[in-house]
Amino acid sequence: MKLYSVSDGPPSLACQQLLKALDIKYELVNVNFGKGDHMTEEYEKLNPQKEIPTLVDNDLIMGESNAILQYLADQYDISNKLYPKAPKLRAIVNHRLCFNLALYYRNISEYTLAPIFYDYQRSPLSLKKTKIALDIFNTYLQRENSEYAAGNSLTIADFPLITATMCLEAIDFKLDAWLYVMKWYDNFKRKHPDLWEIAASGMREISYFEKHPPVSDMDHPIHPVRKSS
Image 1 (cartoon, rainbow, N blue to C red):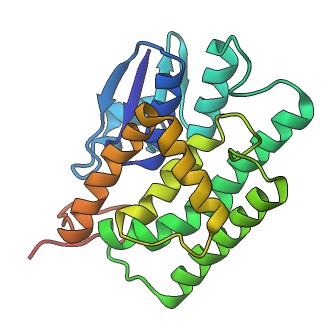
Image 2 (spheres, one colour):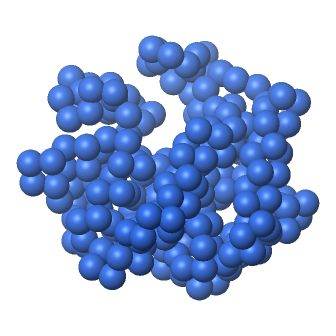
């Protein structure tokens, strides 16, 4: 098994957390995003979307981090706890995965990561959207009164939500106004230090780049990039 991963990418780190939780041996292939490794013809053959991560498991080649998480849990979690099969429990996990992809990580990354790695500025609108995402997640945690993102047991839903939230900590954004999110976040760190360290390693890189923004001479097909002088 191989996981093509970017060292500070939240979706990649979420997949690494699950592989660690499942104690799966695999080869970690570091994709240098800054140098454009993901834009090469060789990588495009693996992932036509040119996105990271990509999982290779024998004859299965798969992108999209949510799909990777779902596959790994279905295929290798013999306990069925990380991705429960009971329809209602699984529905909640699936909802949290969709919520993270469509709104939570999307809004947070627009506010935290885009201004670091691309030629964007943080704005009142991107801050407002981040706060809306936190408000909604806080409401879900409060309404369910659950220890984890999708109930009282660790599931694959926690990994992408944790790695999204760590982007906020990387830029010293405080969670004090969202007590249930802060409680969930701190609980994960305390109870799963080995899994948290995977996220923390990416957080340290993001924190560094926040203070020392990278520049690039490589054109990006979608996003404007910071250009070196």
